[in-house]
Length: 391
Image 1: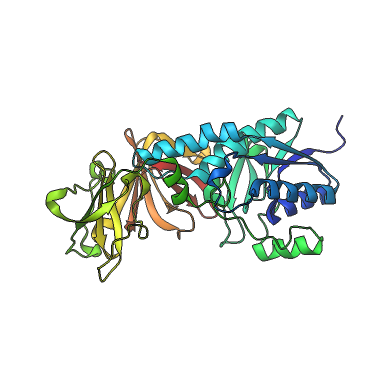
Image 2: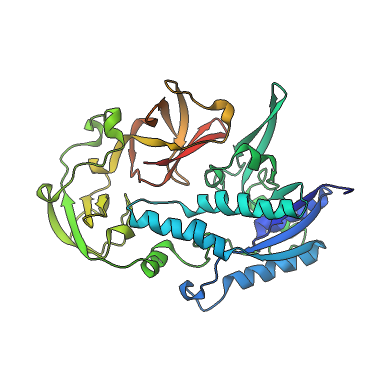
């Protein structure tokens, strides 16, 4: 019989997961540290170093400092299949996936969770800036995913695809702390990673920026860049009907002027400003729409271009996910929520309406740069209720 509950901590070698492990040790858990190696192709790394080795060594040093067991597990093959290959297919199809959300859904709270359960763990823990609460409804436990106390570091958006079973096994020891408090607490415990900088780049590779990775993995294909004029103000933008919400604007060659070329429509995303390499305009160019079949990119001058804005979006039935299933909308029902369509975006009011053909999200004011393939997430107060892939 185990004398105390066992928890496996996903240790990345950073300060957040280091402090999470330390807190759990202090709370009396039997803690095991697990480092996941997620990528094995060093040819895509920006610098002449092996970040995963450095991070693994840091995680191992923290485990030794805390006196806990530690393992390294190679999940690179599963990462490539579940995350990287999917991401590349989505970009080639003209959509904009979010690898960090997939990473959490498919790896940290699926494969990693299964490994932990095989190790007879009661829980897994991560260094995410989120909180979990438990309530009971008719004797059944409901797990609530809440935003982190630090609004600048809240990572609930990245966990928007978790379900009740996954949340039941998850612990988030630093969700009640701000980033400055995390560093201060780590320093007070003399943790070796207290002053380590936060990692930058893709969740599964390290020091690689997404555009660079895509250029390395996808074939270039020269196409036309077409400028679309807009004489209309945003506030004059007519509201779309429900059937029009998920349809791209009907841009074509006849409605614009060819102003340059690009190296592949699949390398770009809606709302993107940098990377086109086309100058000579008083205001910056923004990508309004792209057509990967015809390899065309449509751009507009000024971030106030009406083509950047939509009143709503649609999520197909198979792509709707409820973190809190007790809040699930039935067909014909509607409800007001606070919504974000990308990480760090401010929450905005929207009405969600469930129909047989999918979930419609109608915003109070037009939203900028809605990209297919990204995740829309809705909240009720501090609780993340559900999410879905924008169609």
